Length: 130
Image 1 (cartoon, helix red, strand yellow):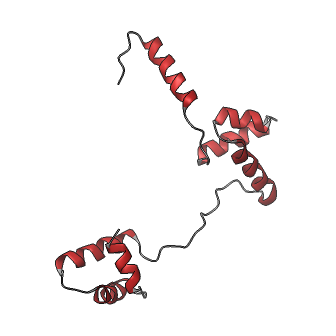
Image 2: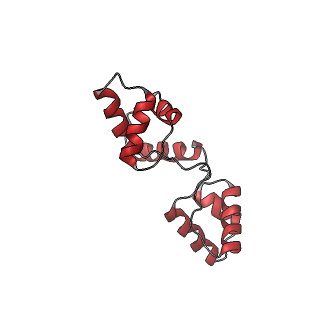
């Protein structure tokens, strides 16, 4: 870490570091509210993306989503939903550590009984070897 003689030089360092940082590709809820506040006072999209330090496509898609759905909330992520939760992961690891001789098929049946839903042997094998 750098040592600075005064707080002014530290502030200059922080500004230079912030300018050199890469732009973000998504907005958190607070930043979404700020963006819509800026749009309400008739700010241009280029001014909003510059102010929030995000790529212009992020602001463009945010505005299009709002105009289409009249909703500013973040959309659910794509991809397949996980069948095993983190609690199930912990349970699986505990079972595997306690009884090291169990096969993945036996662990899968034990976890399926505990979770109340079917879980395949392949899923258990992947979770143990991550």
